[in-house]
Image (spheres, rainbow, N blue to C red):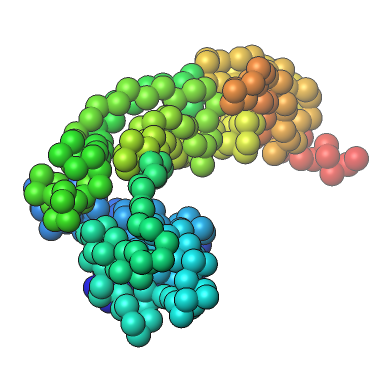
Length: 337
């Protein structure tokens, strides 16, 4: 094939599932991302190639056209129209991969003049000129990981990101070609990289896996098409004291043995500070106490989850002789009952 094999670019088979394609893309994008390979032009070119392949293969409609027409999938409508018009004139069953006009007849840079020439020769004497037009294409979305602490997830926070984004090449309008030749300004890619700083607000209540959308901050469109979106994929880092399940938190609270037996009061840490918790007499080890509304805030809605304090009875150490005699006396009394 004269054009690029997008399946080979991503290292997947032609029968690969959407999940396999996505996994391959993420792995390669991390490997060749410009932030990881600063100053490496070959890695930058490979990164663009990977993005181009994923943009097509991740879209079921584009992938179907690509499987039929290769990297000339953008001209699928023209090919189908050619079939319909040529059905009674000996042109039925035309395919760019057929014996008469092979795939090599169309260059990978989108040589529309060659396409016009072929179709004009076929239809010029019977049905007028073959006309083509390029439609604006929306840019693809980008995912970017971001890590936050549990405290940042509670209160909300901001992040300043430095990202290498792609802007449409002004010389070729994002098409990659000028007068049948690869655009020299962008090397035929249609885009030029630019470093951009973004201030991102992360709302209270985010969880691991939360996606924060920044509209219009994704990949650039083609021929005036809108930009894609940027999605921040959140990971909340583990916390030494609190365990989180949805919007509820759990914390282990040390309780002295005497307090667990006779009752009393202990301090319970929360993200906002400490609260007093009343311990009833004869409280068992592992008992959970619910502190309503002391958990994580609900994302994009009012209210909070709960905090569960789990009792961890602490046995006394370094007993004096008098204390030991008292425990022995207690043991003897418990035996009698």
